[in-house]
Length: 605
Image (cartoon, rainbow, N blue to C red; front, side):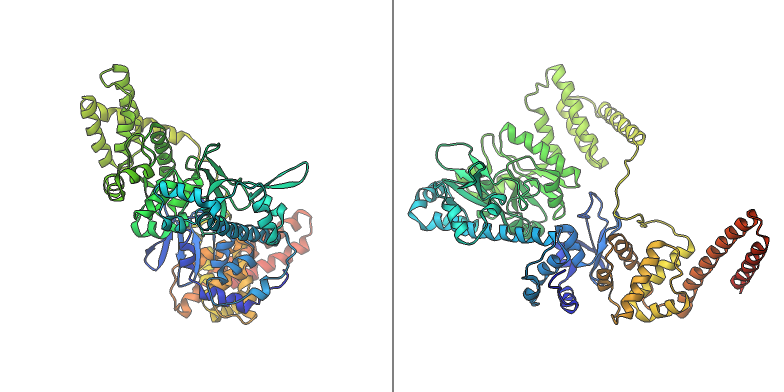
């Protein structure tokens, strides 16, 4: 790596940031005992198995095995190189590493990172330019008046940095070029377009009101341009780029995350304008999808921040159907869903402009209902319960929905409600529900569970180890915390560990301490470059151990490791003896036999 950052600066950065704060930007963490737990961002799960230890400044997932320190977390979650991860963390500290990361780097990852940096800078500059054109120029007056007439205040326009793209063919091309940006790179960033044959560049967005789109960290990565006169399409979004993947981006998520955590729920909407109007009247936890159905990636990002989601989509049939799809996606990742229903023909922005923010907060968001209550109404729509066919279809659809609920109490509540709706006894409906549940259980047992790709071959939560492996794990856990213990283990048993991962970890530990480092688990993990080995080491580091082990405890662990090692040597000697006997090399067989006797005598001693 060119312009290598000195290790002492890396250590200074690592120790100045808190891993709980950094991971908390990506994962909803809850304290349990000494550690924090949340849903793992590296694999899908509904039960938290991802643990962060603030005292050790490390993390480990007991589900998939991922583990490490704050630097490796950023590398894995953001796909950053080691240098870029350190660089990003340095921005949160008072450690200046600009002289080490500002030079030209030649590896491919650095080029990709540099390209992304330029793209973000261009978006940032263009966002300010568009906003200036809207609020400060004669050319933007018509678009500004349009927004004001739609109920946008100047403070809303400033807060969300709404802008205006001139009807010019090449204003942005000249603007970006004049600021030293490569037009080809700006084309790749989706900010301009070109005629391939002539290699001539044009502005992508023309005569549109511009809404900047940010990633989860607040960096501008795309735009959505809305037409305010005649023309199609109504909204024109940036294309997919290195920065912008609309399946992953959630509008206003970077601003709303803190409010979502404080209020312990998110309000999910369909449109940018709905979010802006809602935020302006105090619903600061409002976010929106990117004009498409909610994706698994977006749902998982929301779930990592909160468990509770209130869906507030448009009140027409399309909005209701989209609500069902979004709710099912959210439930699949472990969210509890509520629904805030609008009158037919209204979206949140329409409702707020007609009835005011107070009524929207009290009568729409505040009057949200459970997803199941919403589904009972939704499934009943356009069904005539006096018609036998509609009535049976309604019962079957509702029973299917009730069967998805995990609470027996909820089963009883909605069976009672259904019984009143269709005028049937609860007993009949309960029997029908039991049949559905029985069929589902039977099918589930018959299906073979697909194998999962884990980042390591060894995930041990709840697993019982043989005595010698347990002893190795405890020894390693103590060695990570105490250099003197590591020296003692090295002197008495060296590298006589049986598990290949354990052998690698102990080798790293001996090297780490030999170079003068002090015991620091987070630093130790940083020095382990292999992901699989680091994952195992992080799991062992998470073990609960006696912080001040007795000499006898350590001796017992080492004795177990030593005995197993000798037994393995004896097995190897016995194999050698059999081979010698098959080859009629009886002299050699006799020599090996004597070696085996001596080894067994040592074990007894």
